[in-house]
Structures are given as structure tokens and as C-alpha cells.
Image (tube, rainbow, N blue to C red; front, side, top):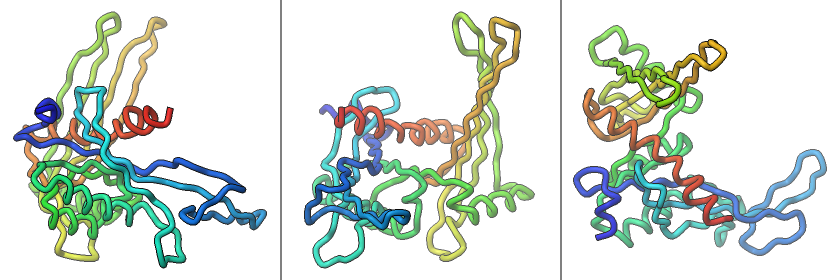
Length: 251
């Protein structure tokens, strides 16, 4: 019953997935190596990447690593393997190993695409995916166009945090439901959440200091004022794949 402590809600656990490098050389290579040609010298370098996944929880520093998926030269292929193809293999193998486990997939904007969404629907996997204005311009344009309607909602919360130095923490949420991920297909709609966090305080010299953070996600969970805070917490847990998993295992 170890996974019960990692459940977010309704027995569902979060899986954060991201790619990482694990080998690089200008001389040593094997038949599975990916190749990179340098434009300036026309010389080749050889490297291995892998797609790592781990079960994570917002309040736990411990993660549970899953079997990684190698990003390496595939049989019969002349082109380099890529992280998107590795993600598809990872998800299919994961669902074969854990056919009944309720999970939420946490990934960066690279994987917030319609092919991945279609695969997640087939595999019955929920998702909270990062999206960015640079990688998903049509999505953000559509949200801005909805601002004149009642379909885009805003709310804000203000807290005082800190012990020795009191800081004002302002959390602003913007969300809308059932919006197209892009305009290439009308099949895949998502729910959109955007979050701004501003931290203000006066330092020991009497100067006003400020820190700002901004995040945005696409999810299949319906968004309300009450659920936005949960989805925001889940989405920000994606970073645990870096330090708690990748860096820990490497070092």
C-alpha cells in the first residue's frame, strides 16, 4: 500500500516524465548512439538520451522511478530517435505494466500535442501539460479572444508569508474550459489554466523587493475556482523529475 501515500485524489498518482542526457563523446560510439554533426567543423559527436518517468507527490521529496525509455538509434531507421517518439513508447509500455493504475501525466510543452492527447485518451491517462505562448500561440490567442465573453474566469488570493521577514504573496488565476489546443483539428479540446504568483517584501535596507512567477497548463480536468488550486499544485510538481529523480540517480 505504498502508493496510497502518493495519491493526490481518488487514488490517483502523478507521473512526471522528461528527457535527460546520459552519455556524450566525440570518439566513443556504439550502434545505438545518436549522432550530431557540428556545422563549424563538420565533425560528429555521439550521445545517448533517455526518457525518465517517476511517481511524484507535491509534499514529498522522495520519488518512485519508473523504467526509463532509451532515446537511441532504432532498428531500420536512418534518422535520430526523438523524445516525442520515446514518449509514445514509454506510455504504451507503462500502461501494459500498470493497466489499472490511475495516473496524471505531467510533461513540458514539448509533449503538449494532439498525437499525445489522442494516445492518452486511448490509454485512459489524465494529464496536466505545460503550454507556452511561444509553442502554443493559437491556444493563447483563443483564450485572449474569449476575454470579452463570460467563458474566461479570473480570481485572486492574497496571503502573508514568512516569519522574520513578512512577505505578501499574490496568486492570480485565469482559466477557461473546452478550448481547442490549436486550429489544425477540431477534435482535441482541453481546459486551460494560467497562474501568476507575485511575492513582495521590504528588505533590511527599506527597499521594496519583488519576485514573479508565471505558469500555464492544459488539462482534461474541469476547472473551477476550487479545482484550479489543486491543478496548479499538481502542475508545479513536474519539476521533481529533475532534482529528485534525474540528478539524484546520476550523482
